[in-house]
Image 1 (cartoon, rainbow, N blue to C red):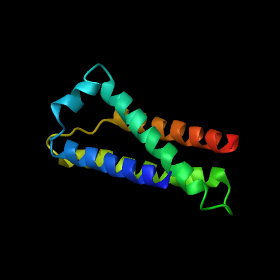
Image 2 (image 1 turned 45 degrees about the vertical axis):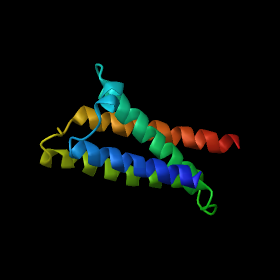
Image 3 (image 1 turned 180 degrees about the horizontal axis):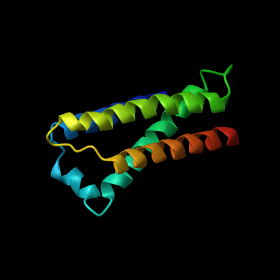
Image 4 (image 1 turned 180 degrees about the vertical axis):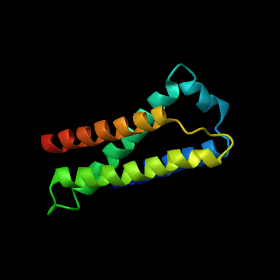
Length: 122
């Protein structure tokens, strides 16, 4: 799981960098080229990131409750996502959007919740 989480984290970082440089390929842009498609993308990508990272960190921290691990991972990601969204003000190809940020945060919540539910079923 940790390798999948690490690769997905690198993928997200790559997407952010390509977006900042306005270099996302048109074939990828076509995936979310519908009304609110970017919001859905924020929700899915950040939700999946939180899901993978939370599951990854629950195992090696057995002396901490799963809820505490999920909260910690979620808060760190929320901070990073917030900084990334705010940083878009400094890139001509990007636009800060509070709804994007809200979709990202909702994805983080759902991803953390899903990780806890998955962990409790094991």
